Length: 448
Image (tube, rainbow, N blue to C red; front, side):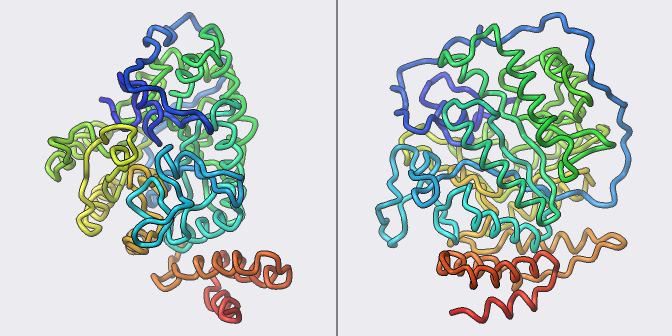
């Protein structure tokens, strides 16, 4: 089963879709719609493998006290204030955030506007704001959509932003995990950046980087002592033997989770995603959504490690941006779609529920607060989190508490050059992270 929202299209321009067929270069102009990609013959075939060095202990399906709530996160936004330019995911080479729309708001590549306005994924004030919101809403951490380590297109930029996010998460006591986009290999091969002969050595270098940089971190998600690794696909290393070869250089084989369908014996399980491929006449119906999710949870019921999914809807901007026809529409139904998908995931008691997504503005799957729906989705996460209470794990944050991180963010910007004020704001942030909401609110109230 494939997901056209991120798989390779027969039309080369679809390679440029945000979160769909790959992150575009920072300065490149999309190719004409008539140009077609390099044939998939460049995809590697399975070859004899060396004796693996990675250790693997078979997993057992152990019940969990409660599912972890992890938000799928995009680290791919840039602004002139921080990075010196507007990144493609705000513009899609069509919109100009420096210009205002009819409502006086920046023109961005989305139907939705974050409460902060368009932001930079490397901005410390933004990361503080987002992590505090996660903490106060009951989200346990993030699953980062990750494009690897190469200085090609903006992959290196996204990798560095990911590292900054992880540091902010660790300060908050939250967890993180990687969802690797192996489609990046095809883009590098097609653009003569990576020889086909080197695709395995590159993939192994990526695995070593993950092992050396994040897998061993106490905040990295583990299952029975093994790091968890997701992939959005696979889209390039399509055979189980390909991944066995990549994992052979690791000390411990990861718990590998693939999209929709478990990949042979190399993967432990799979995860769901909005099935926009099932849209009819541009709309994904409630019946089609239910059929997909019920079938998914049935086929993964016996897996040793299970990942569910919850999402608010789907409303992409691709047609308006001129980069494609779009992938259909899933009605948010004033929050009922998110409530339904979250409740259904909870009924199946997975190890992880992936919240899809924190901030994919291009596809309109955001749960981060926006001008259009405010704090609706985070309040719903809070409600669900209270129903998941387990021994020695009280959750006491309220909807009113969710408003404090935006107040803190606004003050960070207002008093950016004032060291004394920012020292006090540091105290407010620390109070929020420790659960002392009253103290944080009192500090923030001291400033106009």
